Image 1 (cartoon, rainbow, N blue to C red):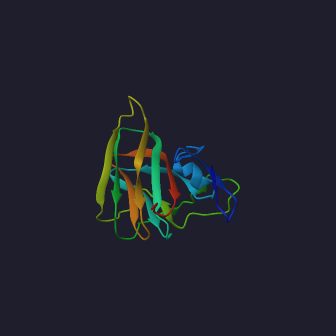
Image 2: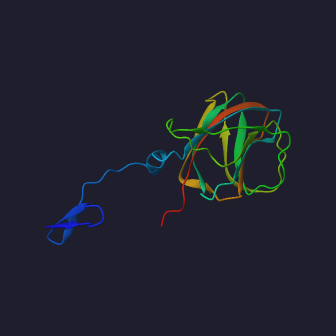
Image 3: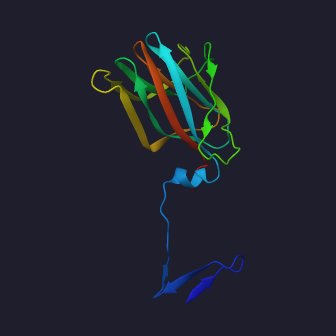
Length: 178
């Protein structure tokens, strides 16, 4: 037996009181990218010592959801993430996130910047890791549960030692799922 939706004609097959379906499984950001809301932020910053070097303020009504940060450092350093920082960034250079759907005209609504010493205050440390340049100067942090930045909230990346840090921050914008 088929159950048909009178609004659009879609139907499902029911057999022995069970709905049978053919499904496609994809990571959620892949679905969101169909609508043009997946971005990559490229950061390339030298720091002289312990410093905040990348800043994100979400201005969109949709939460900004970070899925991965990966990159390279030029020297041994610890890197860490702070959420809910306050203050104004000192001498920032503005960055523009790149939309990962090349056919989309959507842009990320927020403030994205880098600097050698952004000098923000407060915040809650969310993650910390060590990158040993002599062993492997590359790093990749995947956040399976995502780091979610609601509207008007901030996030900072920081390093603890003099180094040049090249990294990309993968994120997408999407409302909370019910």
